[in-house]
Amino acid sequence: MRRTLPGIAGTAALALVLAACGGGSESDSNADSNTSSGDTDPTSMEAELTWWDTSDPTNEAPAYDKLIEKFNEEYPNVTIKHETVPFDQTQNKFKTAAESGSGAPDILRAEVAWTPEFASLGYLYALDGTAALEDNNFQETPLSSNIYDGSTYGVPQVTDTLGLMYNKALFEKAGLDPEAPPTTWEEVEAASEALQSKAGVGGIYLNSGGYFVLPFMYGEGADLVDTESETITVNSPEAAKGIQIAQDMVKSGAAVKPVANDPYGTMMTLFKEGKVGMILNGPWEVAGIADDPKFGGIENLGVAPVPAGSAGQGAPVGGHNYVVYSGMDESKADAAIAFIKFMSSAESEAFVADELGLLPGNADAYDMVTNERVALWADAMGVAQARPWIPEGGQFFAALDTMATEVLIQGKPVQASLDKAAETYKSDVVPDYSLD
Image (cartoon, rainbow, N blue to C red; front, side, top):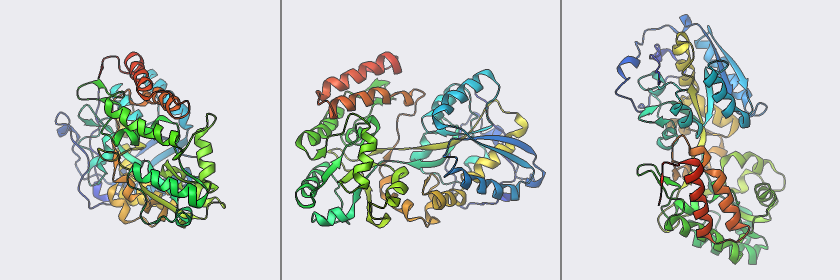
């Protein structure tokens, strides 16, 4: 059964008071019961909260510890037990604890695809009508991953997407304008030819992971499924047209053929060493690229939106959300909401962006960020596209990975590989959906 939180009082007393308009949606069924009274003194609030944080314990978690210290200046009697947990174990670990009713954290850093899944299982509180959604101008696409069945179950912590990353020095060597990167796949092919013939390097490396071929599908107006009609569309003519573009680039030599063993790692090595001019990747790699002595520093890195196909352009949105466990003690509710409101405020997310180079989910944070690594992604985030936010959304990529490997590495026919992915979706992922 879905349970909701009563509103947190004392919104104006938060350390990070925001002026932006609210960014969340409200469920009419529980908005009245969740409104805040606005008269609680933060110093009188007492609670001990456990937060499972899946970020890097060495390079990222210390920044969040600094924010917790700041939070405790306003809420001195709210103890936050900040526990870093391995990302690859947390999804199942949280589900097991929530199902058993023992051991689940009060607050969780949830990957975007986990949020609708956990909400569908009844493991998350709906936050509609609480202060968590007040005065925070969340970006629409990152926020969308928190909305399930008409209610909002989390708020964005960090967001990301894919972009066209390119080596400016190699562009100049090839006679290309580094301030005017390719905007279509046809322009990418032309730039690749120039990089090969004039700079003596590979043009673009296309990773064979399913996530990384989504821009080709989105560019033709395709998606994996249609959630409104409950139809599997991964093998639609539009999807096939997009994937065919990617395969043709590999076959023609415009794109470096991905290797079968560690294609992602190979892509990053070639790019950092200046052996390939372009890749499709996300902001999580900016620090590693910029700090690699072979690359030439942050000033040598260009980032642009993913190129467009015939129907437009788009890249999948990713990131993480703050969510609250529905089985927590109700006496902790106000403190949990106060904490995630503080952590997702524009000021807090700007601090994280400056410290770590991560992209804020709060739109107002961008005006406060000074980290140039974040500014690189402003245009790319403008074409970020919401994924199908259904409980099964995280299960789409195994079949998509297989398809991309078959098409880009093995050279198998595009339509047949997409048809096989569609059949896997039907049998293993969304059996109630119809085949297109």
